[in-house]
Length: 170
Ligand code: MG
Ligand code: FE
Image 1 (cartoon, helix red, strand yellow):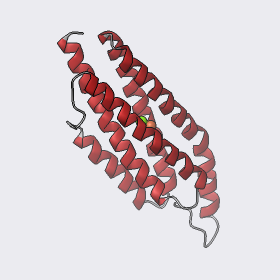
Image 2 (spheres, rainbow, N blue to C red; image 1 turned 90 degrees about the vertical axis):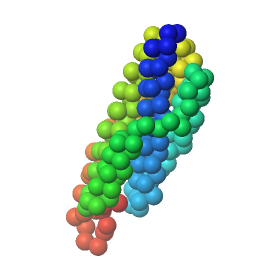
Image 3 (tube, rainbow, N blue to C red; image 1 turned 180 degrees about the vertical axis):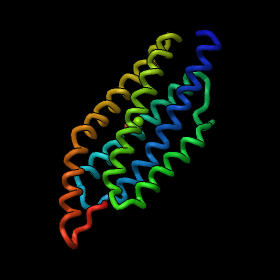
Image 4 (cartoon, rainbow, N blue to C red; image 1 turned 45 degrees about the vertical axis):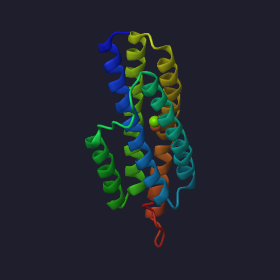
């Protein structure tokens, strides 16, 4: 592996690690606020567990390459994720906005691990490739779940919203 390949791979692994930290923050905030959509809450809590495992797996790849995951550089991204979560909180359709934000986030994760797999291949790093492939599967399954459940959640939200004295937003 050349220095250039290793540096790019490490750089993108650190980005992925920061992304998983943002994901954990965003998902925890979402899950803690959901009251009337137990199925959504349960699925998000499951993905929080997956996200924490992913952080460990990515950190191990970084350490194996001689880097340190603590050098978190994506502060702008962190602020953005926080802003999205806060914006979602303030809206009357919080549950819908939150799931849409998650849908976008999962696809960003899918793009990141797809790129990392190609970089790992180019560097001949089979272990990083294997790790990223297993994480990619979890992100795709979560994205698919959101794709399948978003319409139903919108339906439930609208039904609750149309019922007096029933809270719909979360
Ligand atoms: Mg993830
Ligand atoms: Fe994810």
